[in-house]
Amino acid sequence: MREAAFIKQNKDKWLKYESLLQNNTSPSPQHISDLYVELSDDLSYAKTYYPKSNITQYLNGLASNAHQKIYRSKKESGNRLISFFTKEFPAGFYKFQKQLLLSFLIFLLFSLIGSYSAATDLSFVRSIVGDAYVNMTLENISNNDPMAVYKEASQTDMFLGITLNNIRVSLMAFVFGVLAGVGTVFLLMQNAIMLGSFQYFFYEKGLLWESARTIWIHGTIEISVIIVAGCAGLVVGKSMLFPGTYSRLNSFMIGVKDGLKIVISTIPFFIIAGFLEGFVTRITSMPDWLAIFIISGSLLLVLFYYVFYPLYLNNKIQNDSGAHSI
Image (cartoon, rainbow, N blue to C red; front, side, top):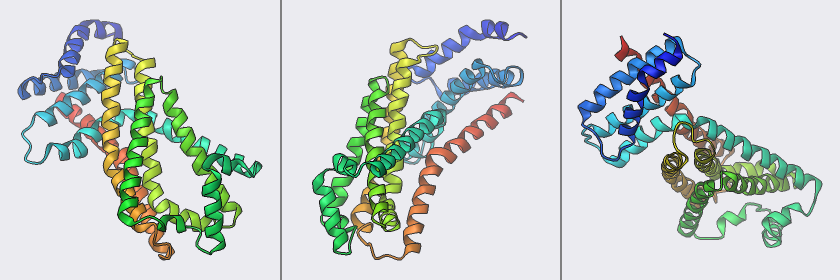
């Protein structure tokens, strides 16, 4: 069957399913299961005969939404919040991997620009982080304790202050997405240039390793999840610029809902980062192997939750779709 004929034959059915899945009033679990089986059959057919077509991607999205509805419709013995973090969110986050990669590349680019700017202009770091912070750091370096800034506030105060500030930044990255994503890019740029320039500042002082092993104890999760929050803003921006088969308003509403879920997913990570900065980073005398262990473990945790686990769940959904079509 030609692709055009396949679409014409099933278009009304798919639009009905799409409307049903977007409806706030959930249908019965049996209805969702029947719907999922039909969508899986259509998806399997499309993957066989039109593997690179947009209709295959469209059906994959519908099947994924139906799969999530099934999870939500089941009676769960655990907490609803646990279900969101362990199943619902990571299963849906797979479709935003391109925005996540774009957010990472934007942050990396402006970090390099920040480093280059600091290398070519001695006053650049001061213009970014302020004279007071630079002077304090220089004084700490002269006192042979360059990372003393992490010891000044009490542990609990620093934990709470940093956590709340990071959550605020995450929300801003999401909200600024309504400016067609430009606001989100600007916020990522600010944070990336600040990081890149300040890391070069320590490099210039011969303290790159000393700063990196300390800052990245909490910064690995903190920076990574700011990038994830940037992804949320880009999702909102994309929903406005590229509505696809939806009206622009419906696309925007879906984008806001998806972006908000991404932001909510970052909160536990920001709490972990705040704890590390408040209670662990200040231990500047810890052995290198322990710092490397914490940094590596933090990176693996972020990559697992936002990259590998969504990929695993998506493959599982694909396999389930294939099994239903046999």
